[in-house]
Amino acid sequence: MSMPGHNLKAGWGVVRIKPWHLAGVFSSSGEAEKFAGALGEGYLIKYGDHLAGTQEFSFEQPASD
Image (cartoon, one colour):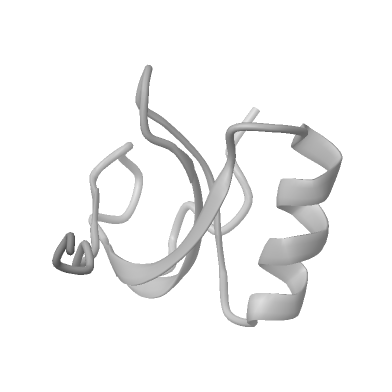
């Protein structure tokens, strides 16, 4: 089964950092938030670039204080 948004090249990604899991890519933050909520704790929403058809998703991490 394909993950949601597997063909999108950019969008709101629902990710878990460790261990890495790209759960889906969405065109709206609202859709991404709803999906992340259904997956539970540990999933974040990040806007970034997705290599279509893969688990590759790049986004900028904010600088730590």
